Length: 237
View 1 (cartoon, rainbow, N blue to C red):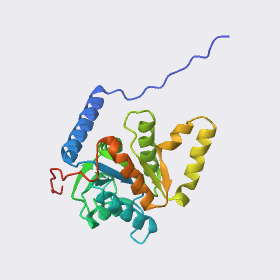
View 2: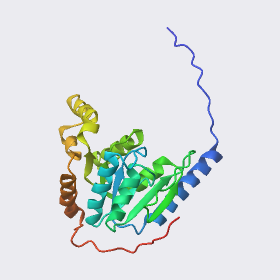
View 3: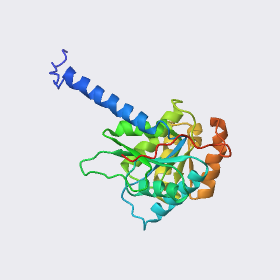
């Protein structure tokens, strides 16, 4: 029996538009690399922009970021409000360094006021790459689609050994319990392995999270006792 004839869809194939897009992306990366080059070892804190300072999630992000900054790390976030603001604020509370990769959105997300420096980024995937590039650990607070995207991007890169086995902290067992159940389901169906469950720590304890990060510092050639200030550009843009 002959196969039915298929009419394939046509779509835009402008090489000029593709070329211009590539140039824009390259310029975004160059801008990001120039802005963040002297940041020193960072820890990324991910979470929702929708929490106010009255929220316990905000308070937790501020507290854990302060403790991370005490280890000598620079706190880096998406640069906006909510959990991002809390993390940057926590770093400044203890005299730590604070960076932001602010995303340009139609609703004009403004950089929060607790940043030593920030860079404005047009594309989400460029911002995510920059946050991962400069980070030695990832802290996942309560968040939405974007936060989960950042979590699984980091864990996929670690799982596939595209980056080193940096510590991933999922903070808040109650908020993330359904997520952890789904991860367990993935293990049972063999879409991930037993070993993959070791890629992250889920906790409600700031002390446990800090201890986990501190224990991982040495294998990356870092020591919190020996981290020295790096050249730092205190410019706001």
